[in-house]
Image (tube, rainbow, N blue to C red; front, side, top):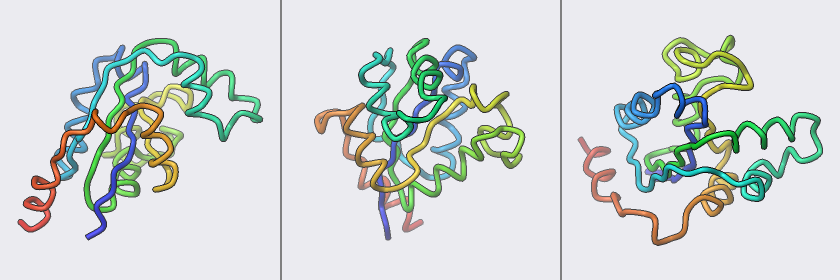
Length: 151
């Protein structure tokens, strides 16, 4: 059983459209557990750190500008193979290419306003979670995961 923890962000467009509850529900219905959650306004420094791998790309400024444009909800999501499983729930970056039933396929409008971010690897998840959460922010729900996986 490969229990992982990943970062999911409900971006400012998800918050402003009132979609956070629907997004959280999709992860929980799949059997994932939310072990930390924060509503926050991201500052530029933290946004640049989060999107650091894109710093030399022409769209970097747009990424930082959008993610800091309003409140977001940061979540730590745990479960078996959480990184890949959560990315499947999220769907392709371009909503027009995202599968029906995925968050982006059902709810997103454009690549630039695609509602959610999910870590793309275990290494990225480890790095990104530290940007948004301290160790004290996590509630242990391991017993829930173990019980749900057995059932």
